[in-house]
Structures are given as C-alpha cells and as structure tokens.
Length: 320
Image (cartoon, rainbow, N blue to C red):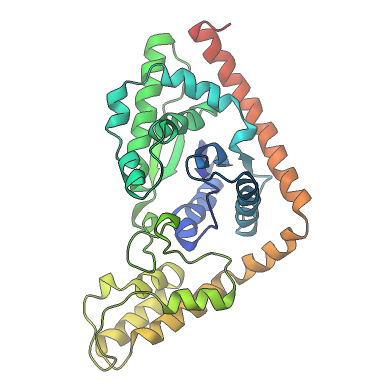
C-alpha cells in the first residue's frame, strides 16, 4: 500500500501539526510504502520571503526526523524537487471544471483568514491532486477539513482515466478522526494563521508561558468544574497522557483543584513528551548536511516514480 502525505513549511511546526498530522502519519508509515513531502510549492500562497521559505523547509525536515521519521523506510522529499508535479497540475487543470473549485470550502476559509485571494490558492486542490497522483498513492491520511480535496482528486483521476485511458490509481482517504482538530490556546483550531499555537520545539520558558495563557472559564478553584469536555488544557493533556488527564478531570469535577494546576501539569507533560525528540533535533542541527542529503535521496526515489507516471500521462494526452 502506497501512502502520501505532505505539510507546508509556512512557519514553526506546533503540537497541532504533531498530533493532527505528524504522529498519525509516522504510525501509518509502518503499514506501507510512505511518501511524505514538504509542500513548498503550496506554501508560496502564504510565504513571500525566499530566505524564510528555505529556512522553514530545513526546520520541517529537522522536526520530522527528530520526531521519528525513518528515511530508510519513508520516501521523504521537498515538493519542488519533484517538478513533474507542476506539469501534472497544469494537465489536470485543463480538465478541471470551474464549479468544482468554486465549491471547495478551503479557499473561502483561507481568504477569510487574511491570505491573499490568488489563482494559486484557488487551484490549490488541483496541485494537491497532482501531489497524490504523481506517485500513484493509494491512501491519503487527512483531517476532516481536507476530505473534500481528496474527493476532488478522486474525481479528477476518474475523469482523466475515462477521457484518456487508465493511468491513475484512485486514492482512498484515511480520515484522521477527532485528533485531527487540536484546539489552540484561544479555543479555535490550532493554526499559525490564528497565532494560537504551542510550538513543538519552543524553549521551555516560551512553552510554559503559552500554556499558562490558555483561555479557560472563570469558575473558582474551590468550585466543582463543569463543561470539562470544552476545557482546552484538559483536551491537550488527553493527547499526551490520557491516564493523567483522566485523573485531573476527576479532581476538577470534585472541586478544590484549579485550572492553573492543570495547566502546570500540561506544561510539564509537553516538555517531558518531546524531550527525546528535542535532544535528537539538537544533534541534527549540528549536521544539516545529513538532513539535506536525506531530502536529496528522497527526491531521487520520488522522481523515479514521478517519471514513470508522467511518461504514461504524456503518452495518454498526446504530448509524446
């Protein structure tokens, strides 16, 4: 089974990225042939600083390797190192009905977040389809908010196959479930766009400050706490140490235990959870040549598959 997933290098990765995408993707890689990429083409819709984009790519690579990605097992590459994906995106654009893109909710959501309403942002689902189809992925792990884009990919692959002959594998989505939506410090979905994130590898002081600033209700310490299913520190603690979260929930419900204490538990748990990855990342920072070599080798493996796909596509549409 071939698996495909990607993440944009649009800023520092946060625990929403980790629990929502990275950890499930790393676990899923044990079940098949995984192709995971750093989506720098996609990030051009929101990152306009060349030096910053290059630095972000290295940071994302460091983060994934520190968190356990095995480059011997997983094809790990930078999207722009496989330029066939943009050629395929143009070909797919040529058969994409405009209403299909107009019906995609992510464009409106991102524009509402302040991202410039560009043609690249509008055709994002087509480039995503090219990412998936170029490596003939069979399974694509996504959050619920990306499910519509997989439906677009399936429709485009089917339309191409019907029009030009059987070329593409029709991918299946693997919905990551409730963990895919990790709350930020303000209660909205954790997102760099909302400036409400807790970085995976932020320093200890910054992490504790972010955690202690999480929005909670105003119930006094001595009162038995209600509506705990909406309590953000508790929700985050459940992702890291479920048993400890269960005990904290019981103490909150009984009264005499405040949100500040839960936040302290959460900060300690986050720092402990990522301590091994933090140490691994510190080692990798001293050897960025290795990191870049991992991406080069991954790109070579991805290009081998992409070249096979594009040879079939070009032949099918008449470009050869």
